[in-house]
Image (cartoon, rainbow, N blue to C red):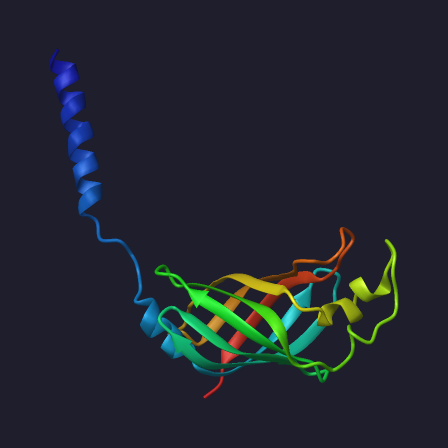
Length: 167
């Protein structure tokens, strides 16, 4: 009985202590405000391609933000929207064309081996998602992964990204 009482005391004491620990969260409203501005970075594709990008976050409401993303080697610019959660995790996606440079929409191809779904043409299809990025370095650095959601099973349109806020 004495051992049971000790065990029960330890169990209750340890669970009570954990309840008292503060949750390590951020104010996502302030975080999205800190994201406003221009960012430069690099996409490193799993297949070995490298592409420089420019991200411009132009507005925010609460924990969501809007902007555009463009590429050093293309005229295509996408409209992006994203969120920051209470733990500082950032995710965003390319939802529509701000300016269609024609790399994907002008591509001709079909079938299971469609060249339009692979590099470089498939890169310029809407729907790329950026995630697994956490705010670091006073909200001036983002590292995460990206993938083309609608790309084919043999797609090389995924990899890692790094973004750094300018000025």
